[in-house]
Image 1 (cartoon, rainbow, N blue to C red):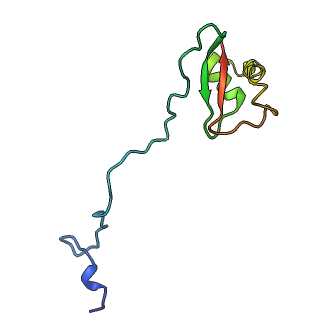
Image 2 (cartoon, rainbow, N blue to C red; image 1 turned 180 degrees about the vertical axis):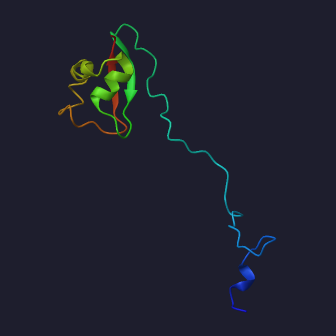
Image 3 (cartoon, rainbow, N blue to C red; image 1 turned 135 degrees about the vertical axis):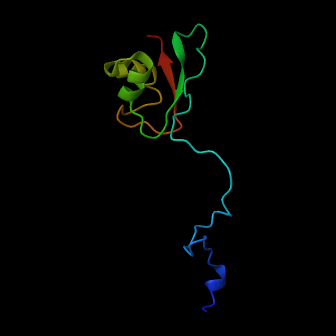
Length: 99
């Protein structure tokens, strides 16, 4: 008998069983959380969008307008925040103009 044999768990057939006794509950999801907030009254803006990892302006435009080619509309509304339309970063808050 080895020094670690006493820690082995076995089932009825003598097979080792995984030990999940230290697993804690919690939640995890790969689903996107809602990132669009309420419209901004009188601003001509439909709302704001918080950029998440993997986003691009065309992907956001496809989600918001149903047309990826409308990415320039989002870019123009956020020229003060976006210097290069190919570089947006998770956590950025973008204005989404009305369609």
